[in-house]
Image (cartoon, rainbow, N blue to C red):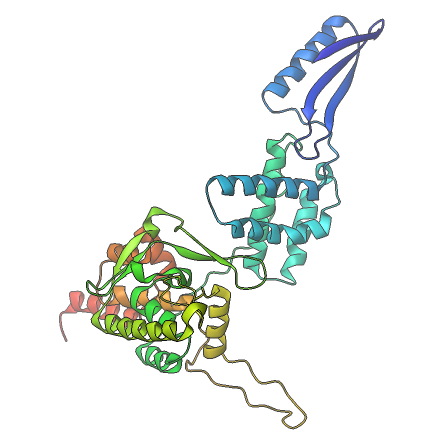
Length: 395
């Protein structure tokens, strides 16, 4: 801060703010005072207090795109320090892309609530409410960073109307559907992942990262120590990382049928390893491709989708109206629904929710109930009959 006399009863108060944290340009502002020196000193003190309290908003040429890039860089450093997943940063950048395309060139100090609200409404015409909600969360955090850097005084995304994300209803397979699914995957690359998901409730990434050293067939135990992370680069590059929370590290019991199946799979894999010789990648993976290399989660998910929800063949000149293909299940199904099936069936069979939650790797049992446990078929009737019995006795 400095006060410079220009003429009688005419002063200039200069505010030095250092570099703009978004654009990197030097920030220096001058405020003209017409009056006695005491008036200039009073303004000097007021401005200094505002700067010290982080309340001074300086003029900035930063655009919305500049703010988004700066926030992404900040998140990248934070995630690197915490040894988090780089895919998280990619996800944020993807969510912000449409906002940058829409009003990225606009100076962030000119961004109004109306701009943001119109962006959400236009987005709803093209994508789901869940996607719009996720875009809002990312944009709101980026603009919060602009407030933190004293580039804007208030976040224009805070007072906008945002659609609620669509709630996914768990898809719990019936016993006959489970049998049909198992029959359909026998002998395919999905055989082991599907059986392990139904037998343990493990996530796809955890199954694809499982090593034989994490499995004790004699004790009937599987230990979850890591998950597979698919990199954005082309090819088959994947890496492995620790679970997100302590609850993710867990040991799961497996039944005799699963133990017998895994023993047979181990023998078959050992024979394949001998056949491949030096061409086999010794990664100790329970689930791998024909060369012993890791399987990408997107590849496994795509194969599962094509098996369970087969696409309709394209029309040709010889067959202009091809009949739709039928899968082993009556309704669409995601791989993650096998985890939902495990959770729902376990609780329906009387296992304590807290124990099931621990097996699933959740920190809180309430999360298991709210998100992963669907309503069991016939549950409403059982509850009604129990209430009726308390009132009127057995009929």
